[in-house]
Length: 321
Ligand code: AMP
Ligand code: MN
Ligand code: MN
Image (cartoon, helix red, strand yellow):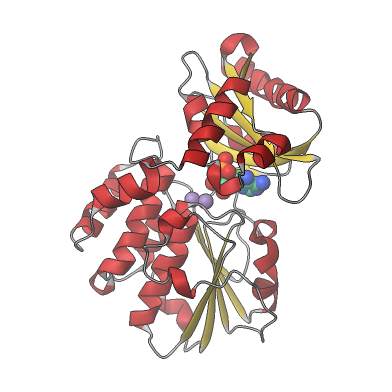
């Protein structure tokens, strides 16, 4: 696919979906496409269906029109899936995907094998927002759309810091700046700022941290009890794994928190500083992601879960030594 316009094909009813627990890139890509389509094809009826997301994103144009209730609806003509590596990660919105007449996927997960009818997956791109930018007509990108895309890039690159930041990422960000957005506002208000609850969660997770593999792996946890005691939900936990990751000597950081679906299950977030490919570890446990950032879901005592991850990480470390 070269341009998003190629797949529109006169579609009257369009929906836009993203992954469960939507992060900045997911929200930015969904609302970026929403705002673009609103002006590029005003005759179409476009709806975004997403799980609830951080209130810090609510200044983005279109947030108020996002549906979080997932009612039963007639099939859509066209369904876009943004920043989602596989069908299962669509969670409760998968029904709109399954019933849609045409399905288009825009993504950057290395573990995305392609699904739907048409897909544009660029594993080298920093973010789904960077992939989406490559499919849009730059002249038709409004300030509102640019804000969404810039926010997504900022979040998935940790403010242009992670190794997924390329020359192209910077060039796209530069083009978006020229649309009149306020980068300082987006970075400070949606990325750096932490609520009191978020900071308490960070503190609790750091205090729980332990080292594995002679300090090459650091892991921390937030338990269901912590969540209840501190009044947390999964939206408060973004960025904790990144703080674990900067531990001196750590090649790998792992963060666990209770998965939504069940109290017995952990959502496992992994980050690599070095040669370990965490997407391989995630895939072997049925998850996915990127070489340096990936996730999966696992059951058991939290330290036993980390033992399993550590065994695979150690195996990779030995292979690359
Ligand atoms: P997280 O640690 O949740 O920030 O996720 C890191 C990256 O891995 C993100 O790009 C996620 O979309 C992806 N990811 C996380 N969990 C899963 C999973 N269970 N299946 C597939 N991809 C995942
Ligand atoms: Mn994402
Ligand atoms: Mn992403």
